[in-house]
Amino acid sequence: MAKSRRFDAARAYRMMVRMRLVEEALIQAWADGLVPGEYHTGVGEEGINAGIVLHLEGEDAMALDA
Image (cartoon, rainbow, N blue to C red; front, side):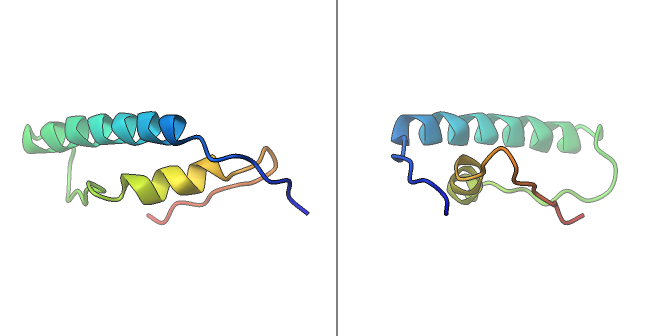
């Protein structure tokens, strides 16, 4: 059984801010023609992504849908 960890709101917020900054840079790169094809942003989904990542353990794996 997984051990319980205290939720670190400050860590989650920092992670969400980093995600948003990367997302905004990718959006700009796509608009500048540096990213080929279509690009679906994750703006507004940072909380979901941070929540998942913060609950991963060392032996966990993530598969991204492409």
